[in-house]
Structures are given as structure tokens and as C-alpha cells.
Length: 382
Ligand SMILES: Cc1cc2nc3c(=O)[nH]c(=O)nc-3n(C[C@H](O)[C@H](O)[C@H](O)COP(=O)(O)OP(=O)(O)OC[C@H]3O[C@@H](n4cnc5c(N)ncnc54)[C@H](O)[C@@H]3O)c2cc1C
View (cartoon, rainbow, N blue to C red):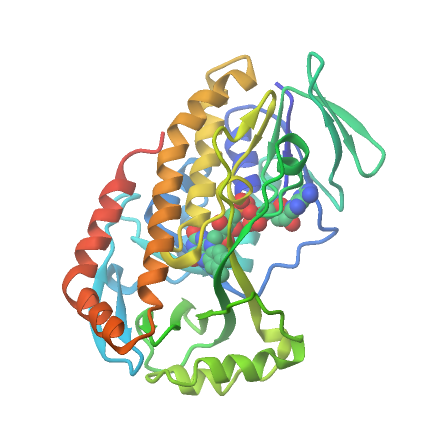
């Protein structure tokens, strides 16, 4: 079976490892000439850890990340008053923490090491020029002038997927009206727990990602999708989250260098099913990029990848598994995409009445909401 993976991000790396452990070889290409992983963090949630068991990286993630203390986080108002303690279930097994926040670069390095260990080499600085899927195999021309024939071409190339644009009708990411501000900072003394704070139209997350490091992620409403000059990002970041209390002021005071701040307009990819055509499939953000309000986009990408490898192991004809793969992924990915967007809307209300209603909801219903969400996601993805 000849498989091409386009994109060496979370989905592509997971797929390469999951295929290798089943004895299925692949070629992998990556657009970037070298990896430059943004200075940000990531919640690796229970369902992602469960899928990661397949490729043997969970121990490293738990050791190098910072598992949520006692498996819960705090939801607070803007002043830092606790509205709810939100407990998360251990989906990957009783000995594996419920959620492991980790630096993106650390996760990338763990996955890159697993890819290398699996014997998969990544051709860097190369992408797909054209795909001709009319013959007995998909013929791919690469931007470095080479070509190859494949039984399956997997677009794991993220939100602006080139594979998606080559093989399907034009589907552009949709701006949601929100943007994310992310910074990695030294962890303040006394900060024990991941804390999510909600203000008027904004939110601010303080997430330990290592013993000495904290990931700060804030969300603002950004009507019109403005682009800011890089040099203004620190001042804007301090200004936009100035209303937050608790550890926020001391953390924001350290945001001075434009290179520290990752500013990302939040977009979704709403691609109609099926996410495959002939011998081409797109997965992860290329198919269903989601808002980060449930912090689950990577979880879905990882599950996509592991399930695809599991199905490919059982068949001699790669493209034949795609309808089954699609049927198992669609509802689950849409559940996350829609639920995340709904949480985002509710969390970023602005009027005093809406804020009071939101805070009451947080106090009285949020834990039940989280429990329901994870009851669905605890169901097997395989
Ligand atoms: C602000 C924010 C916070 C988030 N927080 C979380 C979180 O806490 N937990 C969580 O689970 N998810 C989170 N997500 C979502 C998560 O980041 C994505 O869902 C995940 O990275 C998707 O993985 P992917 O491999 O599909 O795409 P990507 O990670 O984007 O990887 C795509 C790869 O393909 C490469 N590529 C791009 N174009 C080409 C091309 N033409 N040819 C070859 N290679 C190409 C890219 O360089 C990259 O290496 C967050 C997202 C945002 C925006």
C-alpha cells in the first residue's frame, strides 16, 4: 500500500506513527523548510491521550507536560472569584491523568521523535503541485520536481489545506468573530491550578504547562477581523485583558516583546461530508478545524489519524475504507465543532444581564455540561 501524508503536524505525525506500527509504510512531506512551532500551549484531553496510547507517546506527554492537578480546573469571573471547579474524567485509563496541558513545541518534539523512531522520513520544504486521480493510482507531482504514485493521498495539511483545494470544491475557512492571544511565561509562585476567567466579551486562561512555565491564552471579540502591526501586540494584549484580576495583572506586566505574542484570528472549516474523493482524503483541521473553546481540535485530529490507520490495517485496498472512516468521524467531529462554538458564544457575552446569567450557569450547570460532553466523548472512536 502506497500512502502519502501531506503535512507533518499533529494529525500527520500521528498517522505516520500509527501506520508504521501496523507495518504500513508512507511518504510524508511538509511545507515548512524547518519547524517553527508557535510559542503556545495545548490541552491534551482524555480522548486524545486514549488515541495516543496507540502510538506509545502517552508516557512522554504526561512526563513532559503538566497534568491538571487532581483532574480539575477552575472557572472564575473576571476578578478571579471561583464560579465552579470543573472535574474531568480519566478517559485513557485510571492511571492516566484526565488532561495534560503541554507546550506545543514539547508535544511536537515528542511526536517528531516517534516519527523518526518509526523510520518515517519527512521531506521538508515540499508540497503537492498537482494530483491526478484518474488512473489506476493517484499520481502526485511535487513542488521539488519529483512525482509519485499512491493508493491514498492524505491531506493532513491544516486549516488552509492545499490537498483540500486541489481535490475538492473551494472551501475557505470561516472567521468566527473571535481572536486568540497566546503567550508563554514563567509560572508565578503559588499558581497551582489551571484557571479560566470570564469577563465582558473576553476570557483569559492561565494554564501551567510545566513546573516552571505557564501558558496564557486570552480570547477577544474582533469584529471585522483586524490585523495588528506586530510591534503593537504586547501593548494591545495588556490593554485588552486589563480588566482581569487574580494572577492576570502580574502575568500581563511581563508581556513586552512582540515575539512573545501569538495572535490568531479564530476560524472554522465547515467542509461538507464526505471528506474524501477517490483516493484522496483530508483529516484534522483540513476537514473540520474547530474553535478552541473546548480545546479539542487536536483531539479530533489525533482520533481521525489513529482510526484511519486501524481501518487501513484491515484492507488491501486503501480507498475502500474511506466511507466507513467518514461515517465514524462525522458526527463526533461535528459534536465538538458545534459544542465548542456554542460554549464560545456563551462565554463571551457582554451585557450585564447576560454576564449574570452566564455566571449563574457556570455555578449551577457547567459541571453537568462538562460531564455530558465527556460521556459522549468517552464512547470509543474506533
Ligand atoms: C488558539 C488555539 C488554541 C487551541 N488549543 C487547543 C487545545 O488546547 N487542544 C486541542 O486539542 N486543540 C487545540 N487547538 C486546535 C489544534 O491546534 C488543531 O486542531 C490541530 O493543530 C490540528 O492538527 P492538524 O495536524 O490537523 O493541523 P496543523 O497542526 O495545522 O498541522 C498541519 C501541518 O501541515 C503543514 N502544511 C500546511 N500546508 C501544507 C502544504 N501545502 N503542504 C505540506 N504541508 C503543509 C503545516 O506546516 C503543519 O505542519 C487550538 C487551536 C487554536 C487556534
